[in-house]
Amino acid sequence: MRALFLSILMVLSFGLKAETFNDVISMDERPDGVVFEILAPNERSWERTQPKLLQAIEQLKRRWLDIDIAVVSHGNEQFALTTDKASVFPELHQSVLNLGEQGVDIHVCGTYASWRDIKPEAFPDYVDVSASGPAQINDYKALGYVLVTDFAF
Image (cartoon, one colour):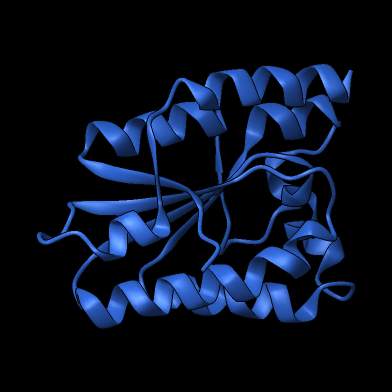
């Protein structure tokens, strides 16, 4: 069931035009915003993703101080953000809290969480539980945000 869901999400995500981080950071004009998509196979994926994500956000803020940024996590990695995992992933939770305080919106997929019988209340207040990860990304794209799925440097 999980493999099927991830396959469906990947198909839905492939329909969304994405830019690489390097494409975005080298744009002549500031985009309306940037939404980072994270779709990974397990909770530990955040340990690899987090430093690259934080570095990408820092570079964007240095280039365009007032740029709007969001992160949508909608694979198995999102479950590292539940309140009961704060002691397992304390650095991740602190950095997500810090990002929120800096105005970066962090979203997880409520639909996928519900399939794992995880309720919205299982996530801390600094994580927004969206109805659907792909729909949240589409909402940001409708606002003029650029989707970034590859933020390797």
